[in-house]
Each structure stands twice: as C-alpha cells, then as structure tokens.
Length: 373
Image (tube, helix red, strand yellow):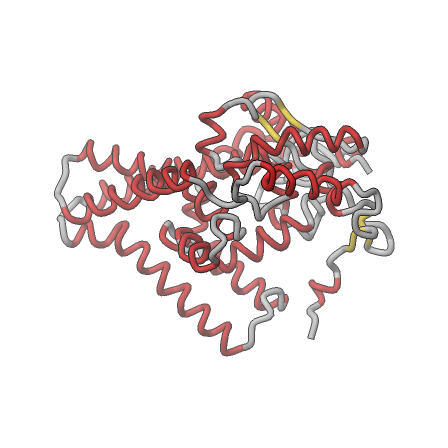
C-alpha cells in the first residue's frame, strides 16, 4: 500500500518534450563511443580509490596496533578527516550510483565504504539517489534542503529570528555533520522512513535492517575509540578529542561542498502547481536547480569527486565523475542550443560567497526573487 508521503511526490511535465535531454544523451553516448572509453572508473579513479581508502584505513590500523606519540595520533586523525570526506565524495558516491564499475558487486562493495566511515548505505541511497536527485530543491521533498534545527535552506520553509545569524553559525553545524551522521542521523531516518513507508520494508525486514545498523555503528565506534583505549592504552581524552577533530574536518568539507551546488543564489527553488506538477521537464529542472563551480580547478576536482560538476552529475549519475570535465563542454553547448540555463560559478571562493549570501537572505524573510516562481 502506497504511503501518504509517496502520494505527495510531485510529477514533472511530459518527459523531454523539448528534446533537450534526448539530444544531450545521444551526444554524450557518442563521445564515449567515438573515443572508445568506458563510462566507468579508469586508472585515475582506481589510484584515487587506493589513496583515499589508505588515508583512512592505514591510520586506523596504526593507531590500533601501535602506541604512538600524541602529536602523531592527532596528525593521523587529521589525515583521516580529509580521507573520510574524500571517500564520501568520490568512492562511495560513485559506487552507490552504480557509476564506479559495470559489475554491480564492485559497486556494492565500494559502496559499503560508507559503512566503514560510520554511515549506512541504504539510508543514503534513499535520501540522495531517490529524493534529492529526482526532486532537487523541491520544498518538503528534497531532504537536503529541509530545515535542520536552526538552519534554513529553502525560501519556502518557516523563518525564525535565529535564522538571521545562520550565515555565521552554519560552519559549526557543518563541522558536526559526520559526527551527527555516525551517532544519530541514520537511526532518525530509519524511524522516519519506516513511519512514512518510504523504504517499503516488511516488518521483518525493518527489524533485520535495524539490528544490522546498530551492529555496524557499534563496530565503527569500537575500532575508532574503544580498541585504541583498551588495547594500546591511549588516554580517553586524546582519542575522543582526536576523533572529534577528524569528524569536524570531514563534516566541514562535506557540509560545505554538498551545499555549493544547490544552496546558492543562482539556483532555483520551484514549487509544484495546484495539480502537484513541476512545470518543467525533469532534465531542465535539474539545470535550473544545480550549479557548477570552479571547473578549472583540477586539484579541487580531484578531491571533491567531481562534485563541482554537479550539473553533469545530476544529468548522468551513472557516469563516473572522472569523465565530467570532458563531457561538460557537450552539456554546456547543448544547453546553449536549446536555450536552457547552464549555471556555473567560476571559483570556489565565489561559490562559498554565494552560499553565505543565500543563507543571509534566507535568514530574514521569504524571498520571492530567490524562489523564482
């Protein structure tokens, strides 16, 4: 039986009425065919995978099997913080979209790298792959722009007095993002999706999933906190504060990078009409609600897993991100031909500034101009 939440999901106008997306798909497919290259991971992606996974796993092993000086433990947790964010943006992201490999088993195993760093794959796929990718920036459907405690990411949500300062305190909440994820987010989402029927689990499957989730969470905190203290005799304060430092680094990176593509001044926040229809084709809706940034910054592109090419990612999530710089010219040219917006901020600094200005404006009132209805 369909849940009340699922019945509320909006629809888009007839698929590709303008022929924009079908034309774009043909051109992108031709690019891979003519150049005889796979849409999946290449050697560059494999090397990146080894580097990022090693950046997390090796420090964990060293801390668990060796007694190191305090400063070394802190440095290793710092490395793990950046590696954790990189794993989330590159490896598990591509794998859980089915973009890393043609073999689903490879995607599944690499997707579980999210579990390795404290998250849960199923919850993430439901929130990100389904709700966010399909209904980008749509109020009360896209979980990514839901109000979060005292943060307001949508011009259509309720505004509170405290929101006027959100452009200042937002960095604190970004810094606790992965810590909250590891401790509570998956559990909260489990009960939310169970109540709404969004996960479509049977009662038995819900119970099995909950048990596995609790077990994996306990395992994560065991090898990150308990074992170093019990086996190697590190002080509790050293391990706890180093763990918090790791989470603060990864949370700040992930929280900021993921917001720079949608929660910026250039992006639109459409609402469905009275018939619960978004008055645009899905692909054009993605072009209006998604913004690229710093496309020319190769080091940034390597680290953030192509998330600065979010337009290409939202249109082609099944293509490994290492190919986005090459197909971006095709997407931009096709958008120009069909008079479809191709939104891009030239620099990282510009994208961060746009995000903070949006937060500041959303903190004061409902802004019809930003809603662009």
